[in-house]
Length: 190
Image 1 (cartoon, rainbow, N blue to C red):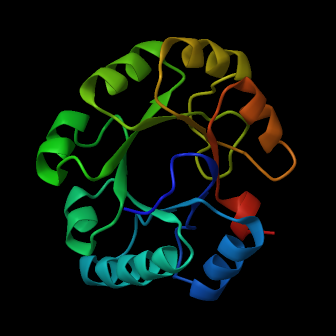
Image 2: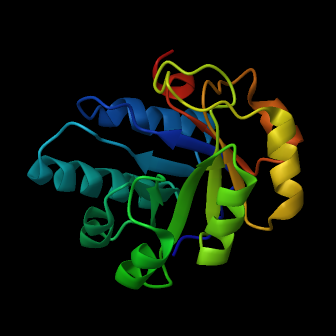
């Protein structure tokens, strides 16, 4: 495993054709510590190809590579971990499939109960948000900075703040208790 932890800038790939130059330039320019491959619309063969390319890029830059939602793809390409939502496979089942060496992150929206359950179930980090208005998930549940601070008081695993985060507003999330901040447009749509 790489020597990184869940901290710093967490890039999430845009849900569009892979632009490896754009992603590599962002990793270098912004010192991205974690990169999540998030593809909702693409065939399975293509996903494995894209994920492998991104994994190799992440290894080159000592960046953790996380796959969104797809435990089988995560294991197949040897990603460093998976991020799962509330409607996806649960943490215990993902851990049974992947084993202990993989990182597992869980979306917990704005819920202390979900955060506590994720930690009890063996998640390595949680994601809270949308912290700010987000174009990528306009229907997202809002999570205020004060909710982040309150949840942080009750759990020991890292928190990733997500939703409308950009290079200007990211610092308020760290001050509220996030270990990491996730961006899509803030990194890849400038």
